[in-house]
Amino acid sequence: MAKLETTYMGLKLKNPIVPSASPLSRNLDDIKKLEDAGASAVVLYSLFEEQIALESGELSHLLEGGAASLADAEAYFPAEQDYPRDPDAYVEHIRKAKEAVDIPIIGSMNGTSTGGWLDYAKKIEEAGADGLELNIYFIPTTDTLLGMDVETLYLDIVEAVSDSVNIPVAVKLSPFFSALPDVATRIDEAGADALVLFNRFYQPDINVEQKTIEPSITLSSSADLLLPLRWVAILYGQVDCSLALTSGVHTSEDVLKALMAGADVANVCSVLLQDGIGKLKEILEGTSQLMDKLEIESLSSIRGSLSLENYVEPLAFERASYIKLLQGYGRI
Ligand SMILES: Cc1cc2nc3c(=O)[nH]c(=O)nc-3n(C[C@H](O)[C@H](O)[C@H](O)COP(=O)(O)O)c2cc1C
View 1 (tube, protein in one colour):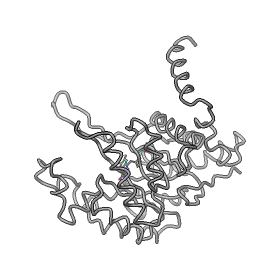
View 2 (cartoon, helix red, strand yellow):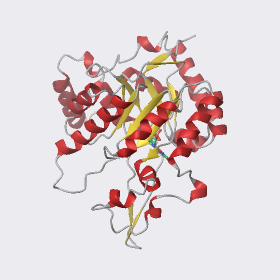
View 3 (cartoon, protein in one colour):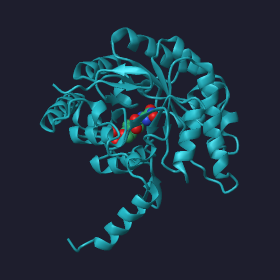
View 4 (spheres, helix red, strand yellow):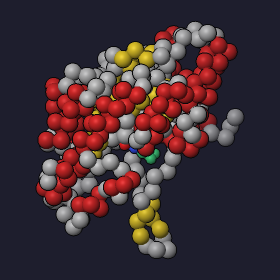
């Protein structure tokens, strides 16, 4: 039997399949089902900075200069009955989740400033979370903001949180940096125990007939794996912290690809929203069978085996592959 154990940000996990933040962790029954299906840990849906600001009366201050035209702060959130808005209820949810299951529970916070909302990191730790994932969902929309300002924002948040808690901290990154290995290394040095590649940005569409912008969340497919796969392969060996791959993991093969590129865990989300929680069991069993078939004894034996670390001239290798592919297209 293939050995599926892995270590992720200091947590010893029985396998590399970790459901990422999503509505599937909103209720305890589903968290239990995720555990029963074989999930080795669960990242809870995010607590948003805006939720904390709303509770503390600071939301209008937070919106100043950015979304001041949003007269009603309520517009930020779904109906109360659909979503627990109270940040303390989130902390309580973590406490209950910890009681309900044996697998590690990783809290998630989503925000873009170094304000008071970060105090909730400590509360999440005190509620028993085994780790904390920071999703810094920041979209620069003005030309007065420099790339290094954005990077400083990330670093300041990571430093503030990792100084305030003792549990491991993961940082969910965006792919939109001009020199990701440099940023990743600095986030690692600022105290991150894991990098999660990549945050999937909500990308609004345009309705041509209505002449309106349409908010949309599209679920991923395995084709979306290629972007994080490449960057995990590039970062492997360059950062000391763990790596999680999120986006496009839909099959057992995708899980092994993530590991071969250099990830410690493969996050699943869209596939479970699409096919149900039971799909996790199928992916897990399939991973084990595929490893047996390919005579892979353990994940540690393949981790990073196809990372860029194995190439003497990574930059030249990337360029050479690119040129060869473009110029060779259609020749077979
Ligand atoms: C409906 C939905 C809700 C999500 N909620 C969160 C969230 O609260 N926090 C977060 O960091 N990511 C959230 N995500 C992003 C996922 O955790 C995941 O990183 C992303 O969907 C890419 O993985 P996938 O291709 O497996 O879906 C959400 C994604 C979806 C589709």
